Image (cartoon, rainbow, N blue to C red; front, side, top):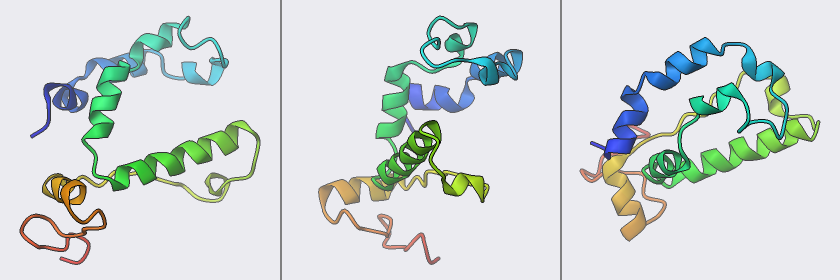
Amino acid sequence: MGSKVQNSWFRDDRARECHTQFDGYIQTLKAGEYTASKFFKCFRTSEQIFEYVDALWSAGSSNLYALSSMLDDIVNKKKTAAELFNLYFVPIVNIDGYDISWNSNQLQRKNANEVDLNRN
């Protein structure tokens, strides 16, 4: 259903193997040393990341903004909801609704068959 890069994002087990190999390493990683570390090769290329994010529905940008804002607060030692709750950031993918939201009503909640995915 997605592009080759998107599909490889889900099928590619190399990243999982890499993360398993370096399990626990992220705790010792210091800011500014990411690209010099052995762990760096576990990350996706920026092209893969951008193509995946571009495929998300418009609500995905709000999800990414909230996550980014919270991570900034954590780095700056500000209190966040993450200290009190287990938070899960899950993008909701509505492929046919994505096209509708960009070409007509951006706040469209229904898919191409007029089914409200939040209610049915």
